[in-house]
Length: 294
Image (cartoon, rainbow, N blue to C red; front, side, top):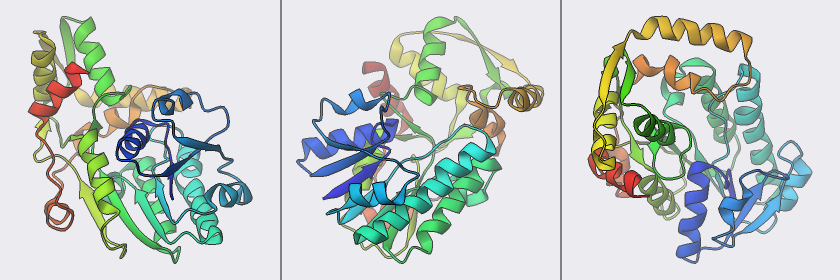
């Protein structure tokens, strides 16, 4: 039995659907009264409401599971919220997994942990440390910018913007590059990873190439049959305003992390992931068509 945390999230819900279609038995650990629990109804997944701050509750939920896929995490939030959700929660899940006799632990981290940019990167690195010292056989995947259907933030924001506005402001002229990876490719890799040795290795998970933000919008627009005019906006003044905004509004749905790190993205080496796990991610040109068709 495989336990999945973060099952109601963007990546997690796709993973649960894929497991259901392949008849892989999973148990989804979800927060009580999770607002996105309905995402799991179609897959008829087994769900267990779990208090992630309580080791006993977690251990009971993990009883009988041999593998944990820990995909639960927070991307945007205060430094304290990120630490609690990403570091402390991971510490609790690891401790409960050890208590429940879980044999393998697959952690979905982030490429942000490589350079540890900002509170999010620090929190993901801290979570990795909890897994590293757990004593449980483990494997870690570090995804980059994941996109695809059901993504309300990254892809969803881009598509909503394209549909709504004929003139679109582009921070920094849209020249900053990301290395987007399609959610279906990430899910396939997670399932392939279950057949790999859990020997503590860490794998980067990103698309085959870097894509400028402007090109991403253009490709999505073409797939949607929309032609838009892009207006370049200087990045640094906007980032300064975002920092001020965050100092006042601690809890926000504004994609603050993405804005503050637009000029910090780098190319990620996925050769080891391709070699060891047979990873073959699709180009964003193809992924954009899938997003538009969903």
